[in-house]
Image 1 (cartoon, rainbow, N blue to C red):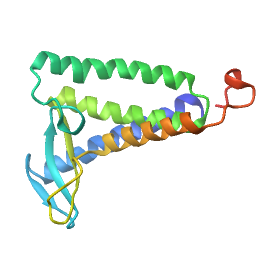
Image 2 (tube, helix red, strand yellow):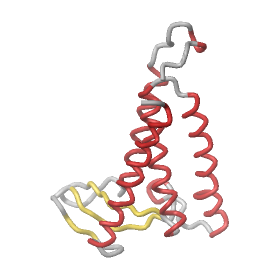
Image 3 (cartoon, rainbow, N blue to C red):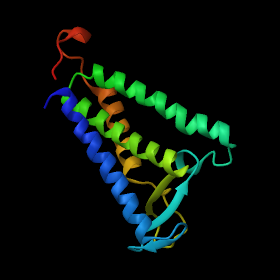
Image 4 (cartoon, one colour):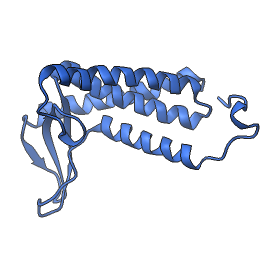
Length: 166
């Protein structure tokens, strides 16, 4: 697959994210929860803040700057990394990150926040991982794997000037 063909991964992540959020919006009322197992529930939460709901109390102007304009700058940085990626694995990870970022950004522009709905918790309900969505999963997994690759990958033969393997 050529470099730009990897953008189909981004399109798939974006489509899956938006489709699951649309399904959830039809199946679970805003603010409601639907238990699936003793340790997993579907919730319908609009996160107007950042990571794990932080900074939800920001006034509209700083919120717009932080959660809309800053991600647009991040998309530019992702485009730079995508252009510089040297392996198919890096391109796949960057494409998943891009799709996740676009999914959450679409929610922010359309709804003023991000729809989170996957909620894992203890059977007692006393503690749970913050709710998240498909975009969040692709973003965080892609970033962690990319960081691990960067930290533990051996330098290719010929050093940093090695020919592009893509």
